[in-house]
Image (cartoon, rainbow, N blue to C red; front, side, top):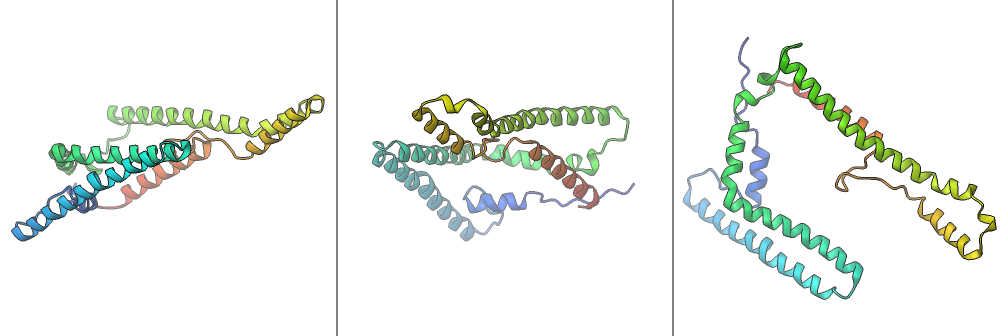
Length: 219
């Protein structure tokens, strides 16, 4: 079996993004380019970690008397603050990520070298692991889907209840409740995707599509 050649740079896009963020030094030995990049790094660092952070603090102080704007600004501030912490962490621990990238570029971690023969111990172990992961994901999506379906039945159950015997104030509350439940309720994964059965099916389809693409594409 002939050995399949692999591209050496699997993280070209990642490195490009890190360079744009001022977190990856250029590979060139040109001192002028290196000096310009250092200036660029300082500008990015001052803008992201000092100027932008100070404006977030200012927005918090300007809206601390208003509840809803304050909650919104706190959310923005925490999101930016965590990003700034990651940037600072990268400045001190960037070598760890570089070592991880070099490890992942090793040919023994590539797809063709990771294929296990059918009915082997490794193949069975990977199948069991994959089935366990899909089952765990199915549990989350299934119960999340049940919550969504049960929530949609609230308006029907309100209509079928003995609401005629209630007072006017309670009837108005029921009307507002029925209007509210028109918007479906979902459990989400970090506000990224709803936990429903359709999401579970989509994940399976996407996983198989990626697998087929990797299998049929020679790197």
